[in-house]
Image (cartoon, rainbow, N blue to C red; front, top):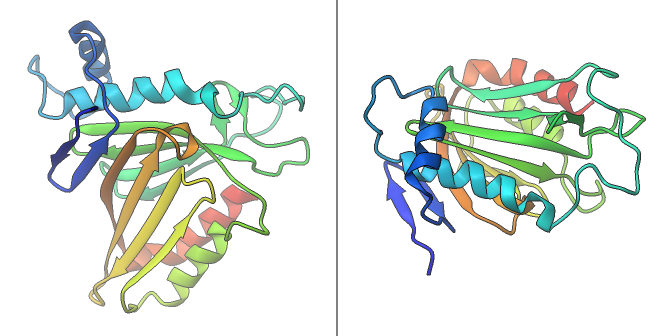
Length: 214
């Protein structure tokens, strides 16, 4: 059975041990690494990044062979950042040098990157038909409208399970966004962690989300 690692609110599962040389190369890319020592949790960084790369084609090919994609550079790329400077979730409409939008500019998928203390995970996440998947822009607009606080958790997720968000507001201006990111757009490894937000960010963030989704 694959090992599971739990540390400081960070949960990873579906992980496999990697060769030390591979982990060392990924450690060099870790923005939190400043010395020659490997930080605690470096192995999970390697697992999250590499397994997502190896298994991406197991669900859907990218770019899809049935639809001609526009090469990056033919349309302006967009990126969305949720969180603070060093702990955040970012979404991009560029994956492996290709835009994830169709010819009409509609977003079909995105590249997600979750950056936590001692851990970074990246995955390609597919969106589904609006008839079966709630709109992320509406979700953040609702958070901004209720910035003073709400009871319990407000949640959003992609239909296929590649990305899930659950937001709690303590009524004092602090928001905790619990992020669950899965490889293979919902059928692979799982990384969970908390991203902080301030209630004052919500109004601007909701507009950024609407712009990103287009």
